[in-house]
Length: 338
Image (tube, rainbow, N blue to C red; front, side, top):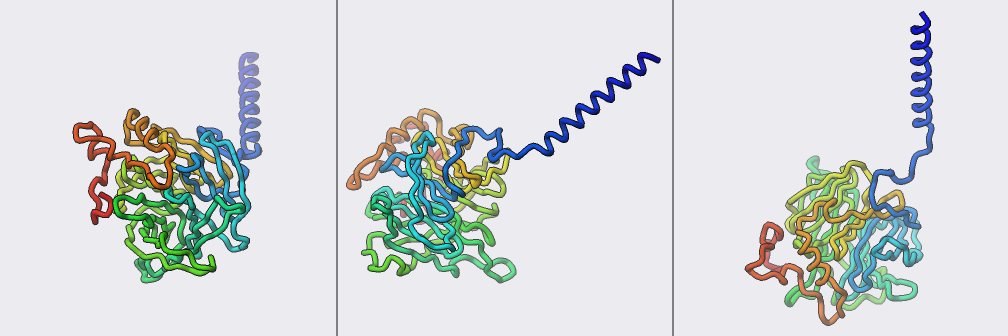
């Protein structure tokens, strides 16, 4: 009888302990950033919405939804936060990229379907030109309607040969999700009024089955694109014709809003909670071997405007073991990028 009483007391104590732990878990305040995420650094921005590596400065640029521009060291340390370039309450900036030949940056205004060209070397930074993407260039949905959640990311494609630049890839977030390739007249004189809209020339639309596209970056190492899906917490490697080549899912939905591919092949992802997450090559699924990453980092050293960097893939001869399996888009659809 005494043993049964002791056992009953023990079971009651265990049950009480488990109940206390459960209540503590349910009532504990939530962490701002999930503790299991590696390489997370809080940034002094309300809602980061895009990121890009600036080869001329050797830093990462991060834009906020309201138009503020932050500059960060490759370690994630904040160097500077600039006030919004445009004082508009309806701004919805969702991506950023850099033209390596000029150092100018380009950001997209989601629902307005606009691209702003910004000179950040000016103090304060100023908008030089405003480009407009025609909504009619986005295909209709199956029901014949065009709803569209707007533009969510942008990346510049490299200029080679006789080309002088101007090709960009945009992500269309949803309804329908896809990639838009446009040509901007970058070498034409800027209009006197920066609010005057310059029409972007439509080049192509590439359908995507993955929803909620939230960012895109050009990977010179593999001559392909890296595309983010925020809803699926997924990183996609995509050819220049929109074909998905590989995908890497993450265990938690972290609100990925944009990414910057660094010369050492690490990736910085902007998180909506107000942070940057660093992903090493092995974690985001980099297809390049480690030796090639070292070579890519050396070739990515900043150079002057008159001497653009040699494309990474041109540094390997025919005897190299780095071949088409690493460069999934060696031949382009039109020969524009040979």
